Image (tube, one colour):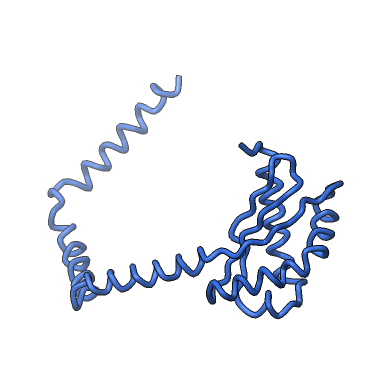
Length: 165
């Protein structure tokens, strides 16, 4: 079970690696697609860190990005060590992950299901229903409703001193 410091350090490492991928790593295997760090797992003693990397374009692109990140791991470790002021930077192990691709597929499937279940002219029916509701609200109020609300407000203001003692 990781403690609070390990969890915080793991998130800091994730943030720094993401920034490096975005700004400093020039390897075309890494910058070719939409590479992102999904999660990091730091060992209990802080000597090893698994970095799960995913690419939006597919699992093969994630594997390619892992090879590029492995070749740049020395530079990444040096940057992390300097930025986070670590005496000993953990050894980084990059692992390809297809969670972003998987979530994109699920989103497409859900969008297809919503489109199938939605009746034709759904948006038009909704706007008509809202318009009818708005028109009927004034008619549904009792005759002395506004005066009754004003009386209640006066009563609250008069009795306010009783509640504040």
